[in-house]
Amino acid sequence: MIREFDKDDLLELLDCEKGDEVNGLKYITTINNGKSRWVSCHSVIFEFEGKTWASDFSRGLSEIQETYPYDEDEPTAYEVEPYTVIITKYRKI
Image (cartoon, rainbow, N blue to C red):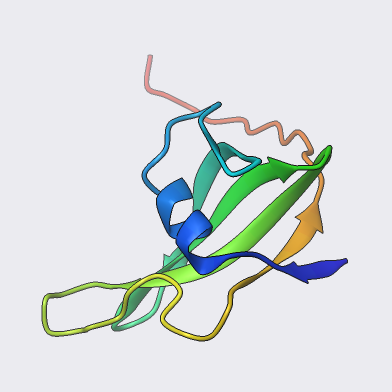
């Protein structure tokens, strides 16, 4: 399911800490999805009306790149669900 959310609400959500709310949107976390040459890509994860949503945005990697979150029209979000990943790492002994 995809739906639109208010741009100002999502921008305000980007400055929140876990559990903070903005007009019914409850902030969970922000995920770094990697980067390209000029921008870093992210998803803000939040709860709304009992469902978990993610909304993607980009930020410029330098002061020359004038890319700001949600520069485009009204941002959309898509429904997501949490899942657990187990990672095994190794260290020197």
